[in-house]
Amino acid sequence: SLFFITVCTADGFRYYVVTDCEFNSSKLNDIEFTQSYYYNKLEFIRFSSSVGKYVGYTEVGIKNAESWNNGPEVIASRGAKERYCLNNVGIFTESALTKSGEC
Image 1: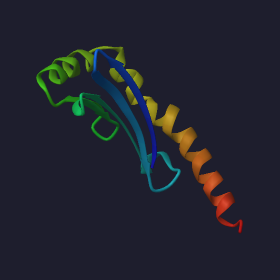
Image 2: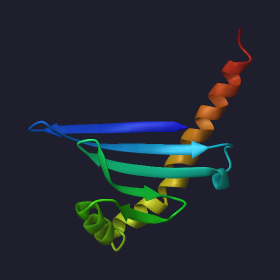
Image 3: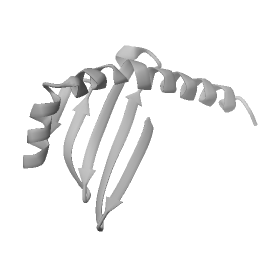
Image 4: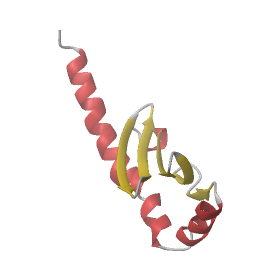
């Protein structure tokens, strides 16, 4: 699993995004891309490549999901599995396999 976290704070409130590539092989069909958005430790919206759209978990998240699913955001996120995960998973697995034989 590859994970990347972006954190922003303002006036004591914390907003962060967790981007994750779950995989059990380097084949595109075996990879799931998720991007979860949090505000003060509460996940309010998530994109999952297996669902193919944003799902909101709070009132604000539901409103954002409706907007983002009808805009360019959902198109960009649908391409992220191939654009973002596939390349990084390939690099990660190649590196792990190369280093696993070293003592």
